[in-house]
Length: 100
Image 1 (cartoon, one colour):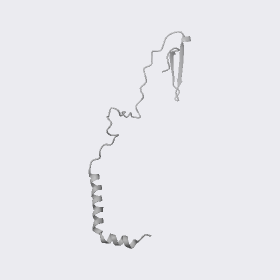
Image 2 (cartoon, helix red, strand yellow):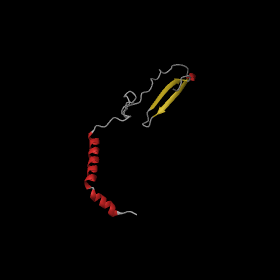
Image 3 (spheres, one colour):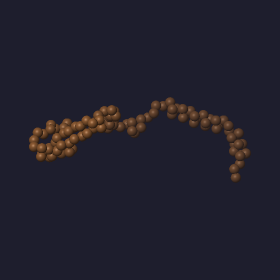
Image 4 (cartoon, helix red, strand yellow):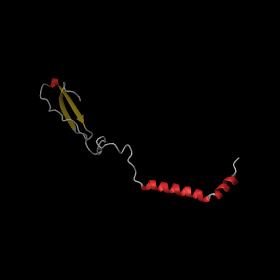
């Protein structure tokens, strides 16, 4: 059974001791705030490993396309791209060219 009187009496007997403990804990927590934060494991990584941030407005870089071949149409693959604004882009490639 829980006895409130006994616990209240023990607190009344040592009020300074409890206050001292609270003050020590408060002082320790304030010192933690005053100290500069130690770098975490993530911050310790060298900057070489971190990928540079690419702005969203930057255009992706693609490899340069080879010049259009000028040969027999049976050896060509013709690509036509129609854009939403109605523009058309046509490009010829050799059938033997890789897609990558």
